[in-house]
Length: 157
Image 1 (spheres, helix red, strand yellow):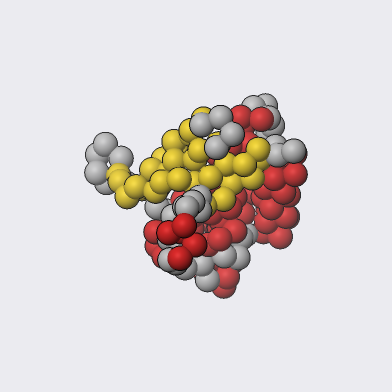
Image 2: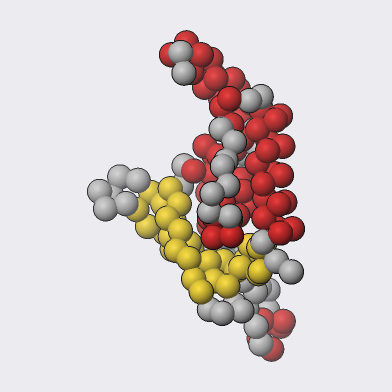
């Protein structure tokens, strides 16, 4: 049975230079209390969507969160380079990797507060800062991906 991981905290932060805005995300495995801290530049959600041909912020967030815990279970698993394949194939590869992680190893979800008060009030979404920061436009993502692939071909990489 896959392990459950929960996003227990999201802190607005930046790198040491103060120039790269980011989130510090804490993932906790409730079964044993193990935590993983993840530094996620705010631009990573949109960049992941473009690279992997993803169609929503939720898809990109899911890919990034599972990418953070998957190496715990399969440290030598190679990741497909999304720039070497079509957008459709990149999306399929990224989502298949998430599904593999969920099926075989671990799921990652936002923590839900426990207790009587949590049921009585609207539960806060710990991932709301990430979701509200970026809006993924499918047309813009496809256009940006094509432009990036064209630039890579012209550079000979």
